[in-house]
Length: 203
Image 1 (cartoon, rainbow, N blue to C red):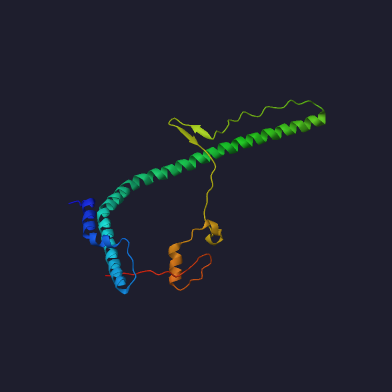
Image 2 (cartoon, one colour):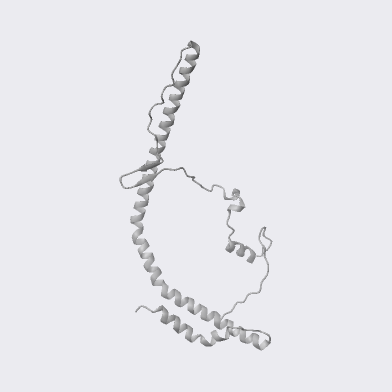
């Protein structure tokens, strides 16, 4: 039977009411209050752990259902993604070839025009400027039957040597820094390492 999250939370809260009442405006000014606060800390952490376990227990079926749906859709979406990549490759290759063809035709026309001018300078003949060939313009946005496709230039970025990437482009890893500090290395460039009191409570 599916559990009711509201009921489960209410049950946990009701069982922890005495604890929750003590957690506000708590002061520790004597050895006796220290012991009481330590007991409260142990109880509060245990209550938090129980709530976390209950939360995970309630959400696990949802996570499992989500994963099953993802796996169900994955083969179909992978096939679509492969097709999209192929279409992108073919279309951009063709588009680039059209641009190259237009540029080549324009270059040849300009060279022919320059040759005619040089010849005219030698013979004194007056040469009318020739029209450039009517090469179809390569549009950035193409209208298809179902919509439009826009072609634009982008950048392909690949990291080939991470050590040479500037520091301002790097993301410091806090877990790795903590692991290094725990190993005994506290002098780390660019990192301020200071001691702080923490509590470890076990039941």
